[in-house]
Image (cartoon, rainbow, N blue to C red; front, side, top):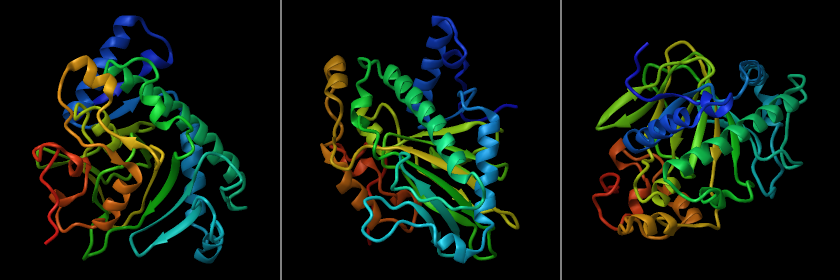
Amino acid sequence: MVYNYPVIDLAPFITGGDAKKKEEVIEKLREACSDYGFFVAVNHGIPDQIMDKTMDATIDFFNLDLEEKLNITTPPGAPFTAGYTKEAAKSEHWQMCTPAPTNVFPANPPHFKETMEEMWWKLDEAAVLVQSLLNDCLRLPKGTLAKYNDDRGTDVLMGFHYLPATETDQTAVNAHRDSGLFSLVFENEVEGLEFLKDGEWIPIDHIPHSLVINVADALQALSNDKMKSPTHRILAQPGISRYAFVYAYLVAEDKWVEPMPELIGQTNESPKFKKFNIKEHMALKHVFKNPPHWNDVVGVHYHAIAPSVGATAVTTD
Protein backbone atom coordinates (compact mmCIF):
# COMPACT_ATOMS: atom_id res chain seq x y z
CA MET A 1 0.00 0.00 0.00
CA VAL A 2 1.19 3.50 -0.83
CA TYR A 3 0.84 6.13 1.91
CA ASN A 4 0.86 9.90 1.46
CA TYR A 5 3.01 10.37 4.58
CA PRO A 6 6.28 8.82 5.80
CA VAL A 7 6.23 5.19 6.96
CA ILE A 8 9.71 4.30 8.22
CA ASP A 9 11.14 0.88 9.03
CA LEU A 10 13.37 1.04 12.13
CA ALA A 11 14.56 -2.57 11.78
CA PRO A 12 18.22 -1.62 11.09
CA PHE A 13 18.37 -0.20 14.63
CA ILE A 14 16.46 -3.10 16.21
CA THR A 15 17.71 -6.29 14.59
CA GLY A 16 20.99 -4.91 13.35
CA GLY A 17 21.98 -3.36 10.07
CA ASP A 18 25.04 -2.00 8.37
CA ALA A 19 26.02 1.65 8.55
CA LYS A 20 24.56 2.42 5.12
CA LYS A 21 21.08 1.13 6.03
CA LYS A 22 21.14 3.05 9.30
CA GLU A 23 22.13 6.26 7.55
CA GLU A 24 19.28 5.75 5.07
CA VAL A 25 16.84 5.57 7.99
CA ILE A 26 18.32 8.71 9.56
CA GLU A 27 17.89 10.59 6.29
CA LYS A 28 14.25 9.47 6.01
CA LEU A 29 13.62 10.58 9.60
CA ARG A 30 15.30 13.92 8.95
CA GLU A 31 13.05 14.58 5.96
CA ALA A 32 9.91 13.36 7.75
CA CYS A 33 10.43 15.58 10.80
CA SER A 34 11.24 18.58 8.63
CA ASP A 35 8.51 18.22 6.00
CA TYR A 36 5.68 16.57 7.98
CA GLY A 37 6.56 16.72 11.67
CA PHE A 38 5.50 13.10 12.08
CA PHE A 39 6.05 9.60 10.74
CA VAL A 40 4.71 6.09 11.23
CA ALA A 41 7.31 3.66 12.59
CA VAL A 42 7.22 -0.08 11.91
CA ASN A 43 9.58 -2.71 13.34
CA HIS A 44 10.17 -0.43 16.32
CA GLY A 45 11.05 -3.18 18.78
CA ILE A 46 7.87 -3.50 20.85
CA PRO A 47 6.50 -7.07 20.54
CA ASP A 48 3.07 -7.36 18.90
CA GLN A 49 1.72 -9.53 21.71
CA ILE A 50 2.55 -6.91 24.34
CA MET A 51 0.76 -4.21 22.35
CA ASP A 52 -2.28 -6.49 21.91
CA LYS A 53 -2.34 -7.45 25.59
CA THR A 54 -2.14 -3.80 26.63
CA MET A 55 -4.96 -2.78 24.31
CA ASP A 56 -7.20 -5.65 25.47
CA ALA A 57 -6.64 -4.81 29.14
CA THR A 58 -7.44 -1.16 28.55
CA ILE A 59 -10.67 -1.91 26.69
CA ASP A 60 -11.67 -4.23 29.55
CA PHE A 61 -10.97 -1.42 32.02
CA PHE A 62 -13.07 1.13 30.14
CA ASN A 63 -15.93 -1.40 30.02
CA LEU A 64 -16.19 -1.32 33.84
CA ASP A 65 -19.02 0.58 35.52
CA LEU A 66 -18.38 4.31 35.76
CA GLU A 67 -18.59 4.27 39.56
CA GLU A 68 -15.83 1.67 39.73
CA LYS A 69 -13.61 3.64 37.35
CA LEU A 70 -14.08 6.90 39.24
CA ASN A 71 -12.48 5.28 42.30
CA ILE A 72 -9.23 4.82 40.40
CA THR A 73 -7.66 8.23 41.01
CA THR A 74 -4.99 9.91 43.10
CA PRO A 75 -5.99 11.69 46.33
CA PRO A 76 -6.16 15.50 46.48
CA GLY A 77 -2.73 17.06 46.84
CA ALA A 78 -0.88 14.22 45.14
CA PRO A 79 2.25 15.38 43.26
CA PHE A 80 0.99 13.85 40.03
CA THR A 81 -2.51 13.14 38.77
CA ALA A 82 -2.81 9.49 37.85
CA GLY A 83 -5.67 7.10 37.27
CA TYR A 84 -9.03 7.70 35.62
CA THR A 85 -10.59 10.86 34.21
CA LYS A 86 -13.98 11.29 32.51
CA GLU A 87 -13.98 14.08 29.95
CA ALA A 88 -17.54 15.24 29.32
CA ALA A 89 -19.33 13.26 26.62
CA LYS A 90 -16.42 12.81 24.19
CA SER A 91 -13.86 10.61 25.89
CA GLU A 92 -12.37 9.09 29.01
CA HIS A 93 -8.80 8.23 29.83
CA TRP A 94 -6.42 6.90 32.45
CA GLN A 95 -2.79 7.84 32.88
CA MET A 96 0.36 6.85 34.70
CA CYS A 97 3.84 8.26 35.17
CA THR A 98 7.13 6.42 35.68
CA PRO A 99 6.25 3.25 37.64
CA ALA A 100 6.12 4.42 41.25
CA PRO A 101 3.76 4.43 44.28
CA THR A 102 2.13 7.62 42.95
CA ASN A 103 0.37 5.59 40.25
CA VAL A 104 -3.01 3.99 40.92
CA PHE A 105 -4.39 0.88 39.23
CA PRO A 106 -7.69 -1.01 39.35
CA ALA A 107 -7.99 -4.49 40.82
CA ASN A 108 -9.91 -5.41 37.67
CA PRO A 109 -9.17 -6.42 35.04
CA PRO A 110 -6.66 -8.87 36.55
CA HIS A 111 -2.98 -8.09 35.97
CA PHE A 112 -3.80 -4.58 34.73
CA LYS A 113 -0.93 -3.05 36.73
CA GLU A 114 1.63 -5.59 35.51
CA THR A 115 0.46 -5.21 31.91
CA MET A 116 0.67 -1.41 31.94
CA GLU A 117 4.05 -1.32 33.62
CA GLU A 118 5.40 -3.80 31.07
CA MET A 119 4.05 -1.59 28.27
CA TRP A 120 5.56 1.47 29.94
CA TRP A 121 9.07 0.05 29.86
CA LYS A 122 8.74 -1.06 26.24
CA LEU A 123 7.56 2.40 25.21
CA ASP A 124 10.33 3.89 27.32
CA GLU A 125 12.89 1.86 25.35
CA ALA A 126 11.32 2.96 22.07
CA ALA A 127 11.32 6.60 23.19
CA VAL A 128 15.00 6.48 24.14
CA LEU A 129 15.77 5.05 20.69
CA VAL A 130 13.71 7.74 18.95
CA GLN A 131 15.40 10.46 21.00
CA SER A 132 18.81 9.11 19.98
CA LEU A 133 17.81 8.93 16.31
CA LEU A 134 16.45 12.48 16.31
CA ASN A 135 19.67 13.61 17.97
CA ASP A 136 21.55 12.06 15.03
CA CYS A 137 19.13 13.64 12.54
CA LEU A 138 20.19 17.04 13.88
CA ARG A 139 23.88 16.02 13.75
CA LEU A 140 24.29 16.82 17.43
CA PRO A 141 26.89 15.39 19.81
CA LYS A 142 25.68 12.19 21.45
CA GLY A 143 23.35 12.81 24.39
CA THR A 144 22.53 16.44 23.56
CA LEU A 145 18.76 15.98 23.35
CA ALA A 146 18.73 13.61 26.33
CA LYS A 147 19.71 16.38 28.76
CA TYR A 148 16.34 18.09 28.23
CA ASN A 149 14.62 15.05 29.75
CA ASP A 150 17.45 13.86 31.94
CA ASP A 151 15.51 12.78 35.03
CA ARG A 152 12.74 11.07 32.99
CA GLY A 153 10.32 12.04 35.75
CA THR A 154 7.81 13.88 33.58
CA ASP A 155 6.99 11.27 30.93
CA VAL A 156 3.34 10.23 30.83
CA LEU A 157 1.49 7.21 29.41
CA MET A 158 -2.20 7.74 28.69
CA GLY A 159 -4.84 5.30 27.50
CA PHE A 160 -7.85 6.85 25.75
CA HIS A 161 -11.38 5.75 24.94
CA TYR A 162 -12.96 8.04 22.36
CA LEU A 163 -16.74 7.69 22.22
CA PRO A 164 -18.62 7.33 18.92
CA ALA A 165 -19.50 10.43 16.93
CA THR A 166 -22.87 12.07 17.42
CA GLU A 167 -25.06 13.78 14.84
CA THR A 168 -23.88 17.18 16.06
CA ASP A 169 -20.23 16.49 16.90
CA GLN A 170 -17.72 14.41 14.97
CA THR A 171 -14.62 15.70 16.78
CA ALA A 172 -13.11 13.59 19.55
CA VAL A 173 -10.11 15.86 20.20
CA ASN A 174 -9.83 19.39 18.86
CA ALA A 175 -6.85 20.53 16.81
CA HIS A 176 -3.77 20.98 18.99
CA ARG A 177 0.00 20.63 19.18
CA ASP A 178 1.97 18.69 21.76
CA SER A 179 4.20 20.50 24.24
CA GLY A 180 7.20 18.26 24.90
CA LEU A 181 9.90 16.73 22.71
CA PHE A 182 7.80 14.12 20.90
CA SER A 183 4.91 11.68 21.35
CA LEU A 184 4.46 7.99 20.55
CA VAL A 185 0.95 6.80 19.65
CA PHE A 186 -0.55 3.40 19.00
CA GLU A 187 -4.20 2.64 18.46
CA ASN A 188 -6.75 -0.05 17.72
CA GLU A 189 -8.11 -0.59 14.22
CA VAL A 190 -10.51 2.38 14.39
CA GLU A 191 -8.99 5.33 12.57
CA GLY A 192 -9.46 9.02 13.31
CA LEU A 193 -6.04 10.64 13.83
CA GLU A 194 -5.32 13.42 11.33
CA PHE A 195 -2.34 15.74 10.84
CA LEU A 196 -2.39 19.14 9.20
CA LYS A 197 0.01 19.77 6.31
CA ASP A 198 -0.09 22.67 3.87
CA GLY A 199 -3.63 23.53 4.92
CA GLU A 200 -4.96 20.00 4.34
CA TRP A 201 -5.82 17.32 6.88
CA ILE A 202 -4.02 14.01 6.32
CA PRO A 203 -5.86 10.98 7.80
CA ILE A 204 -3.59 8.27 9.22
CA ASP A 205 -4.37 4.74 8.08
CA HIS A 206 -4.29 1.91 10.57
CA ILE A 207 -1.09 -0.11 10.23
CA PRO A 208 -1.26 -2.93 12.80
CA HIS A 209 1.31 -2.67 15.61
CA SER A 210 2.84 0.53 14.26
CA LEU A 211 3.74 3.66 16.24
CA VAL A 212 2.77 7.14 15.08
CA ILE A 213 5.53 9.48 16.24
CA ASN A 214 5.21 13.26 16.11
CA VAL A 215 7.50 16.15 16.95
CA ALA A 216 6.31 18.46 19.75
CA ASP A 217 6.76 22.17 20.47
CA ALA A 218 9.93 22.01 22.56
CA LEU A 219 11.77 20.04 19.89
CA GLN A 220 10.75 22.49 17.17
CA ALA A 221 12.27 25.32 19.20
CA LEU A 222 15.37 23.35 20.21
CA SER A 223 15.97 22.41 16.57
CA ASN A 224 15.58 26.05 15.51
CA ASP A 225 12.62 25.15 13.28
CA LYS A 226 14.40 22.26 11.54
CA MET A 227 11.78 19.88 12.96
CA LYS A 228 8.11 20.86 12.93
CA SER A 229 5.51 20.37 15.66
CA PRO A 230 2.40 19.51 13.62
CA THR A 231 -1.17 20.46 14.38
CA HIS A 232 -3.30 17.33 14.73
CA ARG A 233 -6.78 16.27 15.77
CA ILE A 234 -8.88 13.15 16.30
CA LEU A 235 -12.22 12.57 14.60
CA ALA A 236 -14.83 10.37 16.24
CA GLN A 237 -16.33 7.61 14.14
CA PRO A 238 -20.08 6.88 13.88
CA GLY A 239 -21.29 3.89 15.86
CA ILE A 240 -17.90 2.70 17.11
CA SER A 241 -15.41 3.59 19.85
CA ARG A 242 -11.73 4.27 19.26
CA TYR A 243 -8.96 3.29 21.68
CA ALA A 244 -5.44 4.65 21.67
CA PHE A 245 -2.32 5.11 23.78
CA VAL A 246 -0.09 8.16 23.93
CA TYR A 247 3.38 8.11 25.47
CA ALA A 248 4.53 11.70 25.89
CA TYR A 249 8.29 12.21 26.05
CA LEU A 250 8.24 15.54 27.84
CA VAL A 251 10.50 18.29 29.13
CA ALA A 252 10.49 19.06 32.86
CA GLU A 253 8.38 22.13 33.68
CA ASP A 254 11.33 23.98 35.20
CA LYS A 255 13.36 23.74 31.99
CA TRP A 256 13.97 26.68 29.69
CA VAL A 257 13.93 26.04 25.97
CA GLU A 258 15.68 27.88 23.16
CA PRO A 259 17.48 26.90 19.94
CA MET A 260 20.30 24.64 21.06
CA PRO A 261 23.69 26.37 21.22
CA GLU A 262 25.25 23.17 19.85
CA LEU A 263 23.06 23.51 16.74
CA ILE A 264 23.40 27.26 16.28
CA GLY A 265 27.16 26.98 16.68
CA GLN A 266 27.60 24.43 13.90
CA THR A 267 25.33 26.18 11.40
CA ASN A 268 26.07 29.85 12.19
CA GLU A 269 22.39 30.66 11.76
CA SER A 270 20.36 33.10 13.82
CA PRO A 271 17.98 31.81 16.52
CA LYS A 272 14.37 31.75 15.33
CA PHE A 273 12.80 31.45 18.79
CA LYS A 274 13.07 33.35 22.03
CA LYS A 275 13.96 31.49 25.21
CA PHE A 276 10.81 30.28 27.01
CA ASN A 277 9.82 28.29 30.06
CA ILE A 278 7.96 25.03 29.47
CA LYS A 279 5.54 25.56 32.38
CA GLU A 280 4.57 28.99 31.07
CA HIS A 281 4.20 27.62 27.55
CA MET A 282 1.82 24.90 28.75
CA ALA A 283 -0.19 27.46 30.72
CA LEU A 284 -0.55 29.58 27.59
CA LYS A 285 -1.80 26.58 25.64
CA HIS A 286 -4.35 25.88 28.38
CA VAL A 287 -5.76 29.42 28.12
CA PHE A 288 -6.36 28.95 24.39
CA LYS A 289 -7.26 25.28 24.66
CA ASN A 290 -10.21 25.32 22.25
CA PRO A 291 -9.62 28.00 19.60
CA PRO A 292 -12.37 28.71 17.05
CA HIS A 293 -10.24 27.55 14.13
CA TRP A 294 -7.31 25.18 13.66
CA ASN A 295 -5.19 28.08 12.40
CA ASP A 296 -5.50 29.60 15.88
CA VAL A 297 -3.93 26.65 17.70
CA VAL A 298 -1.26 27.76 20.16
CA GLY A 299 2.15 26.43 19.21
CA VAL A 300 5.80 27.23 19.48
CA HIS A 301 5.36 30.06 16.95
CA TYR A 302 4.17 32.13 19.93
CA HIS A 303 7.86 32.40 20.86
CA ALA A 304 9.12 33.08 17.36
CA ILE A 305 11.52 35.95 16.83
CA ALA A 306 10.20 36.28 13.27
CA PRO A 307 6.35 36.22 13.06
CA SER A 308 6.49 34.09 9.90
CA VAL A 309 7.97 31.05 11.69
CA GLY A 310 5.73 28.01 12.14
CA ALA A 311 2.23 29.37 11.60
CA THR A 312 -0.07 32.35 11.67
CA ALA A 313 -0.18 33.97 15.08
CA VAL A 314 -3.10 33.10 17.33
CA THR A 315 -6.07 35.41 17.17
CA THR A 316 -8.15 36.01 20.28
CA ASP A 317 -10.99 38.17 19.04
